[in-house]
Image 1: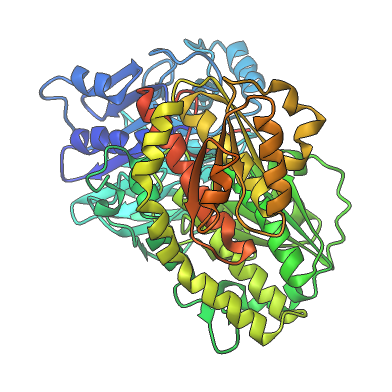
Image 2: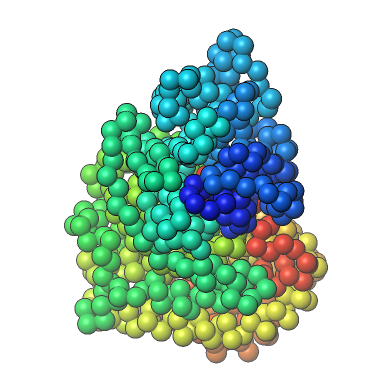
Length: 608
Ligand code: F6R
């Protein structure tokens, strides 16, 4: 998705802006551009490196804005790249989000004689600002007046040739933060470009704008009311966003899983009482405990984590749970009874638009909304009534790995907490806590077997299709395993509940169509083993993922076996997902693909 950086201060803005764009590359983009006050603008379709190479010596100034664009309106061309300017090239703008009424705005401005160069919604916005920007009007007033006529979402930073000593930024539905440095002010759509320069930040909220000069900043509402903001300290450092010697962020992030599980549980286990302590839920706990229904929502991997959460909460706490893909939930006829239902939204980035809109819809109906979010201070974290942070650290690889595992961990803690409020005994709760506490070590054991998974992945790397199967707690992991493989290796993969196989997918089975079957020794082991036999009877190859001690038995029926340590059935997804992440990673590596930035995908999906 698009990314924004801006700078005003004592230094030359250009190096920060280009570096900032590099830091934002992980979000996915298709063109990039920069505007530096008193130097001019440069834009390029394609990579930030192309843009960097085009910046001439002496392209400098002490204020500027830059952008990575992910095309929504108009092709990913140099012309459509940001920053955009009005016809007279006085006002310059970078924009994330979508202006929904841009066609109307454009028509109205065209009728007044304004000419447009592009098909973009952003150009309509910058032209609108310019139309309000007469000689007596300061830039912030023109921006304010224009935004009052806009429908849609935006995170914008505006610069003007006439007022080179200021930048104006505003936010509605698209994140923006201001970094406060010793040598100037940094604006960005997320923390990664800012981290090297300062940890002191101010998060803009929806409907707020900030006027930034070299001397200071002034946050206002769109109605011009002053807003007192708290300066917050970023916890992540630059080191955390580097690859730590691994070839890809994805591998680095999978290798961090044991530590991530620890971090997600840190200070949250109460062994004596056999329960979990989740500070973020404390104030709303009585209402959550009374819930007669829980709705979990999210997109992609977060949705699959929700499916595991459904089983966990139902098994441990007996509360009926429904899981709905956010892009569907937001348009469903609401049958939620606000009094006794709770919405749990899961999002690594905390910026996924569909998830955010599902939350807003639930709030409109008076429901209590909770978030399971990784990015502190993100929009979903702030939009929900309460929640639990993942503490998984920044996830740069586009395909979610460690964040998915941490979502499962947090859901286990919520299941335990609600279970203890229901009929889960203290003894069973304590046993569950012990299993949770052992998970980081178990995850290390799984990772120590990475070489075996790599060898296996190399043998299967030329496949063009794959089927992933599992039952009960393992069926969402089958979906997730298939998603991971298709995302980064472009192998067509389908995830199915194993029992559903005979209702259709079995027709696909033949020697070149391997199946990955999740068959840990859980309550459905024998049934899953029968599914493996059915595949083998049709000459299909099988990779079985099982638990320690069952390797030999499964080797009789499967072609290859991967084992993970034993744990409580409800916690096994946390372990069985790791070999599937590694499998997808090594297959993609063998196929020579751009693992951290797969084609067509973006890290945070902030458009519908
Ligand atoms: C899969 C993946 C996506 C995300 C989805 C939701 O590897 O990364 O499916 O899980 O786009 O993103 P968040 O969790 O940021 O809301």
